[in-house]
Length: 427
Image 1 (cartoon, rainbow, N blue to C red):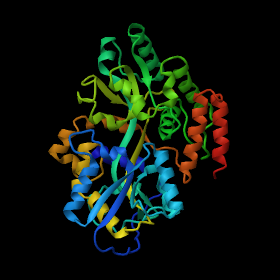
Image 2: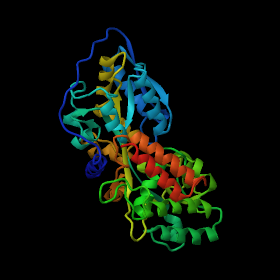
Image 3: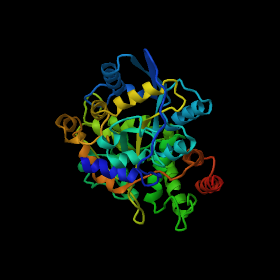
Image 4: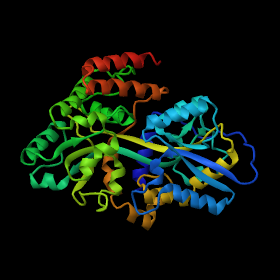
């Protein structure tokens, strides 16, 4: 399992400038009782495994170590774009109410360049001793560690093993295979949905498109290093995505679905395939949450013969707001978040993947993550999202244009040509 974590982290940091070392400024001290507010979405209050929700573990450990510090949770939007927009408002207003907030992997260059996260090098002890170096580099900018990582993932294809076995099919290697399997099964079982995926105008759509883009032989950049979002391969990939909906392989409501909505039919036993991150592996065999216990597996997304089977890697860390009203207390809470106890809490509640060294050598962690080994093979195709120091703007452009094509506002070629033109102007 340790190899799984290392490989994901190596892939996750390829497009992010990261160097070891650096130091942060000393923060002022606060006296007496103080409240530290963490900004993250509602999932911090949720557990998908055997452990309690991570926010409960954080509060318990903070109370044990620092009785004068109270931890509150500021609920942020579920979508990564919504989270980033909220942080941007706080940063531009130099608002210090939220002391700690989640940082998504693609935001690191932007946040580092803008000074939107305090360097942790000299504020949080034990990071280099306890965390995989690549994990820290993933959330570093020009030598400054900007975040304490706590979770990672990779996208892939979930499929119903019982249905494929019943109808005599192997795991699909190409999208043509997947459609052929779906045609045969749904002809006999018209109540089933062939393939579900998130098509709403949010960050997941960029990840889905990235998988399809590479699966149809495309890439983010051409041989000269220029963005190639309007290549023939890209147009073919987006056209196929739209045909999935138009031809009934995916539901009409796909363009309104986020990840939670898109996975529901698969979890309830009403879909053959679904695209989702690897976090589902921890609870798909939980009969209280899933109707497909023992009848599923996880693999890389298919690819056409000239394409590449890939999965999009990602991850989150917590950073400190440079405008925090209580930076010393925030640093103490970050030390608790970086502790083995809290990292174990994430592994038991959300797992895999965490970056704390040695977690997956512990018996109870392995027992709580019995399907973690299913991620190993998928990591062979791990890629990052499109690399950019203006990633938020780039992602917003791709979301808008791809979604417009899916909903029929533009042809796939027109949408991607417009996306290419807009992305070129970011430079």
